Image 1 (cartoon, rainbow, N blue to C red):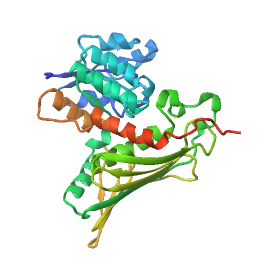
Image 2 (image 1 turned 180 degrees about the vertical axis):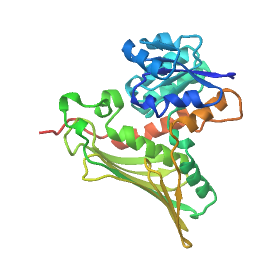
Image 3 (image 1 turned 120 degrees about the vertical axis):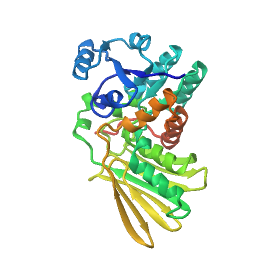
Image 4 (image 1 turned 180 degrees about the horizontal axis):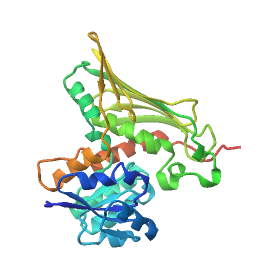
Amino acid sequence: MIFDKVRWGILGCGNVTEVKSGPAFQKVANSELLAVMRRTGELAEDYAKRHNVSMWYDDAEALINDPDVDIIYIATPPGSHKEYTLMAAKAGKPVYVEKPMARNYAECEEMISACKDAGVPLFVAYYRRGHERFLKIKELLEREVIGEVRFVSSTQYQPVSKDMLEVEKLPWRVQPELSGGGLFFDLASHTLDIIGFLLGPITSVQGFASNQGGYYSAEDIVTGTYLFESGIHGVGNWCFTAYDYVDENIIVGSKGKITFSTFGNDLVLTTKHGTEEFRFEPPQHVHQPLVETIVKELTGENGKCPSTGVSGARTNWVMDQMVKAVNRNSNRK
C-alpha cells in the first residue's frame, strides 16, 4: 500500500488535535489533513475553518468511507477505538489510533486482527518513540554507556486536579467504560510504552491497584513489578492523589545510570566519569516526528513507524496485568 501523498481524516477533533497532532499532518512533506469529524457538526465545521481543512463531517462512517481520505486518525476516547478501527479496516484504510490503543488487551487483539485481515497497517500514537530525547536514551543504551542494564524504576505522582472533584461531571479519563481505567491508563501508558521501546518487551507482570482517595470509581494508585524478556527487572509506582508532582524514571546499569522524566525535557547520564545533562526542546507539534515516520512508510520512502498495533497492544497487556484485581467501586464519602 503505497501513496504519492497521504491524505488524513480525523475522527474526534478535540483538544489533542488542536496543537499536538492536527497541524502536524499539514506540515509533514507529502501529507495533508483533508477531513475532520465531530459528532456536533458545528464544532467540526469550526475546527475545519480554523485549521484550513477542506471537509468536515458529523458522522464517522461518512468520513471513513470518503474515497479521498487515505488514512484514519482516531482521536476519540479509547471506548470507541475498536469500533472505529474495525470500521476503517473494513473500508481498507490504514489507521493511526490515539493511546492507549484500547480499553484492554482483548480489544487490541481484535483491532490487530481486523487490520491484518484487511491488509492495512495499524499505528498507535505513542509519539515519544519519535522524539530526539528518547532516541538519545536508546543510543546511550545501545552503546552500553551505562554497561549492562540491571533494572528500571519509575515513580510518578500528582495531586488531585480540580476537575476530579465534581462527581457529576467527571472527565472521561477516569470513567473506565470510556477510558479503560483511571489516569493510570491515560498517563502511565506513556511511561510503560517508552520503557518497552528502550528496553524491549515486558513478559511477566505483577501489580496492585487501589482506589485510596475515593474521588471516582477507577483506580487512583497502581504499583507494579515486571520482568523484561532480556532479564532486566522493573518497578513502577503511580499515584494520582498525592501532595506534589514527581515524574522520574531511572535506568540503572553495571556502569552508571540514566535519569529522565516521561513528560518533561530532562535527561541526565551518571557514570564514574561524572554527570552529563542533555537538553532537548520538544517539537511544537509533539506528534510530528512520529507522523513523519508514518508518511514515509506509506509513501515508500524507506521509513518505518516504530509504534505499531503490536507494540501498542503490548502496553495494554502490561496495564491489564497490573490492574486486573482492582475493585472499581468508589470509596468516596
